[in-house]
Image 1 (cartoon, rainbow, N blue to C red):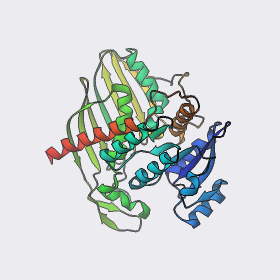
Image 2 (cartoon, rainbow, N blue to C red):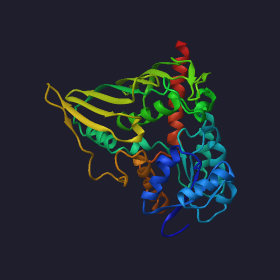
Image 3 (cartoon, rainbow, N blue to C red):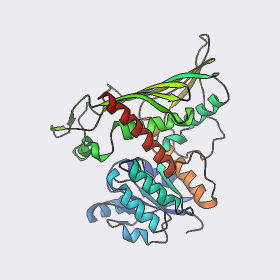
Image 4 (spheres, rainbow, N blue to C red):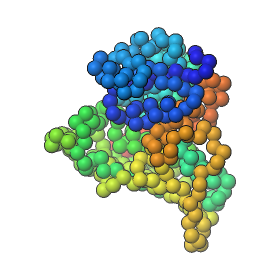
Length: 360
């Protein structure tokens, strides 16, 4: 391990997608990390990535795994390939940052968590970076301090137009339920994990999960059949705080809101994109009709992001900072989403799917 900085290899860096939008800028913005190597899907994409980012790139994983300059392997490829790469990285003695979903299902996630537990000297985290939203962490602190009294109920709304607009042809794989990247696993997974930071792990009361638009529109003009769901409505019980969540890819625009009602007021988080990307606003409305007040994030939050609040890698940078601290001195932040946390979320989504199946 380099004593000055931690070397990171990003697997899945050959296209203009999440790795280039969030992971690579986040790594570059942190003083104690350095981008060491890139892994892409072909020699051609590796050459293009090396020229673009100014670091060595390859289309083969093995040379990266045996490179002592690589301390952390970031896995940003499609979900079905996560498990094989994570296993190989752990076997090679690397720390791991694997994008969410960790696996294609709970069984595979539990297998990876057991493997992780067998290597306590390594740090393995999942990309549930929404936990590090400054507004979310401030909201959790305000709720715990009694700012709105005893919480009574909550509602969550996340609407996106993805199911109504034509999408690039290379995203057409998302129409298959078996890929494990749909409205339940991605959008609801991130949003419900963030809500759990504030209200705790819920019990599933009921759910409906369906495909309101049974065709996947591609920018080539094709209409492809889809079996992946695009809409979820679920009722959750957070230890007596009942939450109604509506997550849909068939909304007219991107909008997000969580409102928690309490005996002394309400607390609201809002945004104009998926909440894990950042850019949220936090307001508190006192009981009795007094004006709402926008609340600035607490200034003393650990692992603050060096990226602007509007940057898609804002929360990702905080997650990497927490990972770096855990690697360097063993300080594992309670919010750090390890593989056990990923299993817990996978199992919650399973409960939602089972509840929805009962209504099908």
